Image (tube, rainbow, N blue to C red; front, side, top):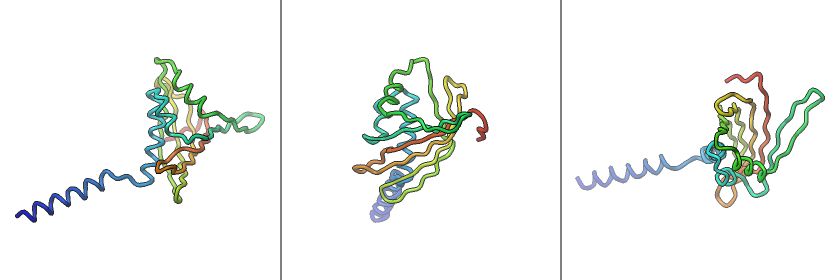
Length: 153
């Protein structure tokens, strides 16, 4: 009887450890979710913690005269999040996560819809590049698209 109880306890421990361990893909997804959770709650430290020290942010800008790429410093983005008025709610809703990993590098493709104070603002896709630094996934580069039409999903 004692052996059965011991075996049941060990099996329970094994399955509970399995349930709490995340795959690499889940870890990458968690970093991206943490970024947008931090943005929603205006937690600048949480937003900053998602990025590597020298991370880059860019946006594809479609104009009638041609396409451009705009750049934004992560520090400026973090500052804007921290100083967003309390009554302004920013909500980027990720529709899907397509994650690829090779060793210490990951890429994530995340279509999204963006809302301000519950009202649709724009949609697009984020392309993230992440690197596992000192055991933790960090965003090293993000580029996104933004549009107001053709926002299925």
